[in-house]
Image (cartoon, rainbow, N blue to C red; front, top):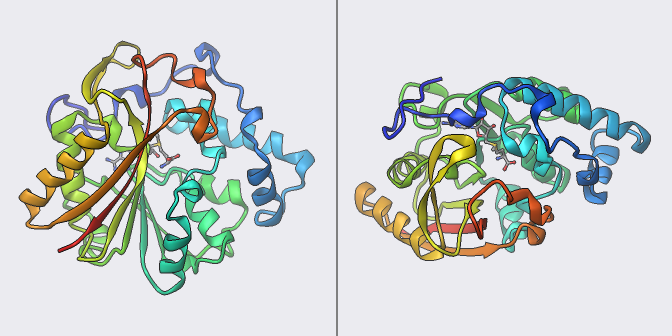
Length: 287
Ligand SMILES: C[S@@+](CC[C@H](N)C(=O)[O-])C[C@H]1O[C@@H](n2cnc3c(N)ncnc32)[C@H](O)[C@@H]1O
């Protein structure tokens, strides 16, 4: 896990290194098992409701032992995100029409399963992650025999993965949620340049990350990391910079949401800087 700060070769954040569960103050996720997710686990994964709490505890603990991302013990992976985007029906329609969707930083592949549950052909779905969360992904959704999506273990910034290489210029929708915010401005630009190499005119890059009404670099003391917080203007500027560097052109829409608007708790951001919120985005490649 390369982590030299300030250069592009730190591909995973330092704060994801293993931590003792007992020392984490926010480890209760039961209230995050919302009715939509209960239904998904019941109807798609065939897990009876009375067994679901035990099941999510098991998966949370296994995931935490792989990487200690704050979102794991906040349970945000149990609250539907992709399907709350206003263009979700368009995304689903594109995949149903044969488009390829690649979820970068897929973690448990939860957004991919929701797409499959809603009728997307799962063989059109790709999940990329730098570390293997895929075994527990199948365990979580109980679908190794049914889910035909493709999981690729690779660093999105890597130029050496042949599986990723085969997707260059082929992807219609790149989903990247809760990933880019782990980097500072320069490295977010470089990461989006890397994402752009998978696209073609007409492709979209969509998702969300932690943002702030005031665009700024933030030093998170609790995580010993410097990260860039976007507002909609700075997000648009980032895609302009990516367009200039890659010879592509993008139309970008981005907007801010509060944590409660995401279905999360207001206090979930208490360890971050003041006014931290979520920025959702849709960037359409024009040329
Ligand atoms: C905070 S989780 C977000 C999970 C999911 N996208 C969501 O919104 O709930 C970040 C994920 O990105 C993965 N990741 C981090 N750096 C990566 C990289 N350089 N290339 C690919 N995946 C990466 C992590 O392993 C982790 O699964």
